[in-house]
Length: 300
Image 1 (spheres, rainbow, N blue to C red):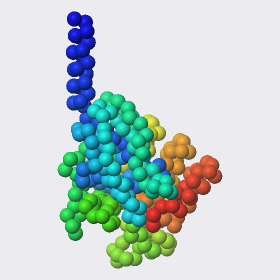
Image 2 (image 1 turned 45 degrees about the vertical axis):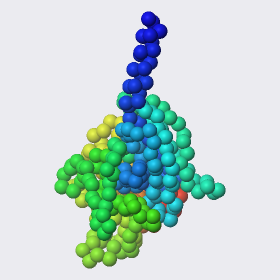
Image 3 (image 1 turned 30 degrees about the vertical axis):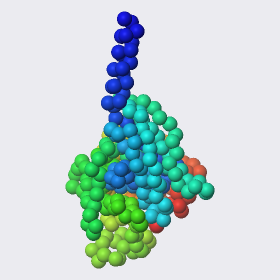
Image 4 (image 1 turned 90 degrees about the vertical axis):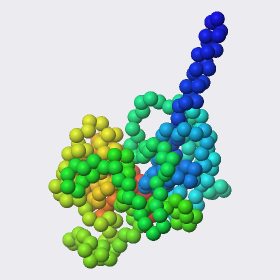
């Protein structure tokens, strides 16, 4: 009888596990931004370096990794997932094979997990995010602080997504450096920063009032990781001055957090020619050197 009970419990456990969906995490080892396509459906609205897709019901998926840098070749692979597990895959580059997906580990899905700064988390979208030719689909899920300051609830911003193109496939996100200009004079109504003649990275900076409100929201959080997450969410749908980036950096206690934010904020900064000003927020020269290397490798 005891054996029968144990067998019955085992069968129930297996059935329960099969009913559980799986999660999968994709991250780029060298910091390349990318989009994830599962079974032909785009999962994230804007390219990121770390993307977690949750609630995956099927045991296998056809994966396509599309880089924001269209010069990089797409990665195609079939992945297999165990029910109730979370699988981590690295987007890895090698001189011989180019880019590929490398399995790192698989763990049981945790009922509660800590939010990782910089990680985009999206629930599986079987219908995907699509855009018809010649038009843009804009999906925004935001919380308004006041007039113009918005926080993306899941790292989602205004974007143009192209899925079914073999050439130039990818995503253009707000704040990216594609289309930057000298002097910001392409549009006669564009904002011009007084006394600045360098490269513009985004159209118009946050107003002083909006920026102070945003800082108050960041500062309301007790933990460093939470502050960083909120700060990144704010700038995903806004544009900052270099001096504003520095002010937010100084709200963090840790040097690593300041460096993390400085790298992330570069794509959302108006006066890129003044970005050297953020260096004042660093304590160590090594942080300045690492930020410079990041900027030199950033797609322009």
